[in-house]
Amino acid sequence: MIRGFTFERALSWPFTAPHAATFPWVFGLAYALVFMALIGVTGLLGAGDFIAWIEALEAAGGNADPDAALAAFFSGLFKLLPWAGLLGLASWAVWAMFETASQRRYLFGQTFSLGFGADELRMMAVGFLWSILGAVLLAVPMILIMGTAVAAMLAGAIGITEGEVAQPILGPMLAAFGMILLIFPAYVFFATRLAPCFALTVRERKIRFFDAWNVSRGRFWPILGAYVILAICGGMLGQVIAGIAQLLLVPAMVSFNGTSQSPDQVAAMLTSPGFLAALGFYLFIVLFVQGVLQHALGGPAAFAVRHDPRGGLEEENQIEAFN
Image 1 (cartoon, rainbow, N blue to C red):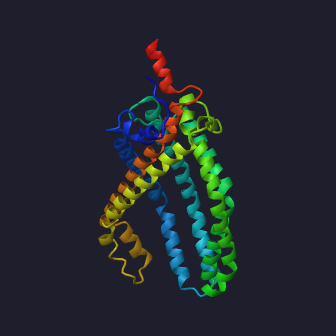
Image 2: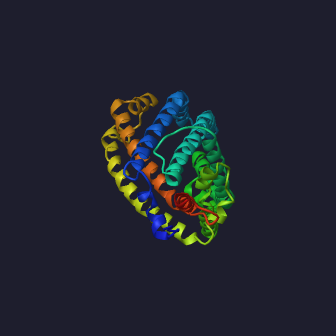
Image 3: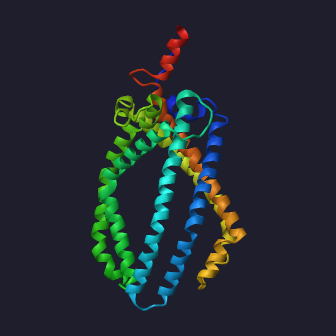
């Protein structure tokens, strides 16, 4: 008997798909370890520029010239941008590897494995299109918010009081939040209707983005409802776990007692074994939870692809078994 797409089955798919007892935990473990390694390597490569930036800011802090302070801030920041870009590009590729592995489990019942090939390149392309969707809908309010935040920061750096800077930026900030309230429902609608694009791309081995609209037709509320329940429950649990892990950072941060410290002292503290161990454990827990949650949230849309109205995988499997 062929059982079709339902809200209950979409919601439970992350927990009933093949390898439910092992796949999410192996996925989360690998996710945490790979991203920690990626962050660690990038941090080591860019540590020299970061320390030089801290030293420049410390030196500029005792200078009464606001132009010198701004020059030191932006000069060091621009040197860090290439490292941030490298980390972003590598993270994009790693995300595609994990997302592809996740969809292979949901679609084909495969065990966890990572690789980088044509499927992952197509996933990167779909991820890029997905980010463009968010940018198109949310770009204007985000630019307003970031612009006003930067203006406030620069005003503080050159000695303008909070009262003097608050009035001119209050209007754009309120307008930005108002636009978000108006645009966000539209973003949710389009994001839900196009959510099957990741699984559809893996299934058909072609870049499929707008074609996901046909898969989600008539399934908007079940997909959105399942996603929201998983996101809220998983997010709350993740916050609790991250909060417990964060307690381990408190003893390591005791040396930051609010007194002025030299760049050498700050660097020594940040590279001390105790601080690095506590920070590493905290990052591992946060990334592990993030990986498990990312995998779970992809389940409902992937389940919709398994029951594509134009011919789903479960229906194909049933027909092949009957023949």
